[in-house]
Length: 238
Image: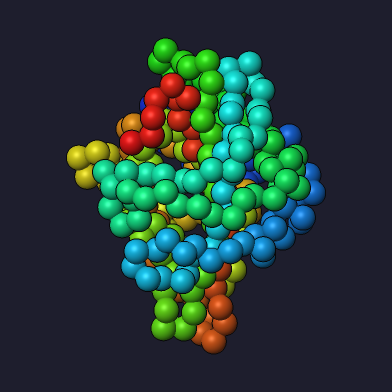
């Protein structure tokens, strides 16, 4: 964890290999059931571009400075148009993450790792975090690309972000790009193995992912990721 922390502190982000993720999370127990839950996501009906290429589920948690994690009542996801010019400005209600996945040891380990990692990196750390968890599937077909970040390179309007790859099937491209606020390119990489992840300081960097398309024609492509964001409980999301 110290190596990840040092990388974030120095550069604003840290790329973490699947092997490092396993070490950080104490293994990836019951991974098959965890990953299989991405086969049960509803279509995102709030895509202002009319796209039907994204599926998702959503959950919110309270994360305490003492490491406690408690699920909050189901609620909408909201971003202002300052952070999401495409889909922001409205309350977006998504199907909830199932209890089985919210309580899954991989989910709980990711949440706990985020609390342990981000609290020491936060100036004037809060007593509690508002934590949002998103299960995303991006789909692509022949002649129809899938857009992991249709809003382009962006900040999420939070403090910290974790993005972890769950599965990548028949995918061409899907490259993650990191930028400074002034537009300078800071890094470019591809999450390829289940468990590959990136940890982001949302105040210091922007992130985006290039469109995906099928690697083998005639077969569907999909990119499954878990995204977890951490925002100070005492600050309203922008």
